[in-house]
Image (cartoon, rainbow, N blue to C red; front, side):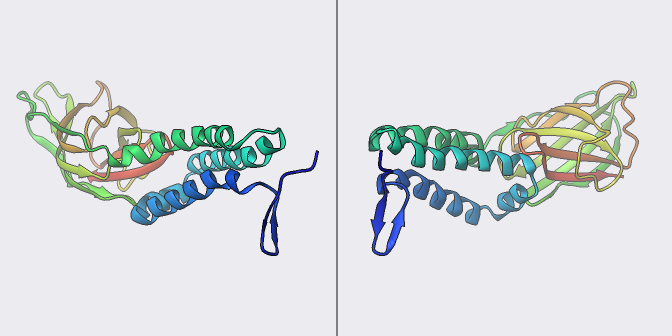
Length: 218
């Protein structure tokens, strides 16, 4: 069977033009999104998970553009197959960037003195707010994120990591998922955790293994 090809002037493409519609639109949309969110672009460059996910989606989309026409599949089926990984990538990576969630919790009634306080600083992402390390009368700790506003994204987790200026969760304790990228929230520190300053409160994107924001409590 002769391979379908598209001739554009002197250029001969190995696939029909209809098989390139979804890849071109997805590429343009992805480029526009990364230009709008340069911090996300920098994080993706530093993330093997993000690079692997992007490469896998690209391989499926371009592979379908090459294979399906050769199997006699028409424009509708080809575009439908290509749209599935593109839609998955959109739901997992792009859609969370538009999802603003505000959670407002009152300060713990039993909280005693503040064992540490610091401003939240973004790491290749926009972030602001204040982080307090509160010690209860019984000696337990609570981390309070107060008045935060963090650039939204997928699968954000909150960690408390020993040391100053930490940008990875290794050796730390996982407190919980980030319940909201805006507002004020309380996160209990598990009993027995060494929370003596300096420690870093780290907001970590688990999906792509990149830091989002941090504050060093001294």
